[in-house]
Image (cartoon, rainbow, N blue to C red; front, side, top):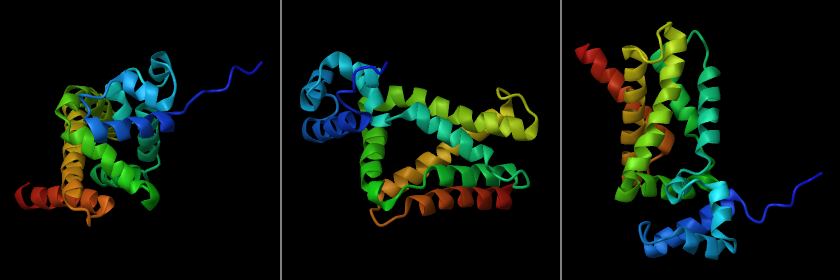
Length: 192
């Protein structure tokens, strides 16, 4: 037996929410506003997203699963730092058709004070993907210093690349990410 058809989609909710965030501001937009714009009840929104703060992050759990898979596909002969570097770039490769939407999403996530505490939880999950990968590649426990540090460094490099990309509309996201990782490698080569 097939259940009743969905009355909305993640994409519908995100489109309505982002439009409202742009018009009213994130803090002033309520779940009720979003539900009304989509034409569904408040409870329906919560079936798709646990909170308003989760909407800018999209389908984050699926995204993390994709990131894990991307890292697992990195060639075993690639040095760990290079594998993480390439994995982060591949994970952040988007079709041109969705780049402006991704820019809007990341601008909201990185520049909205009300989202920072929630973002810290998401960043922790993202760092863990890298830490788990580095632990597996190096034989360390995932909670030991090397994998944990790799997760923090990977996130810091990605965030600095995103900040650079958001400040220059002519910049390429993948080039910004590549620069960020390469600059750290250069710095470590000079001072390590």
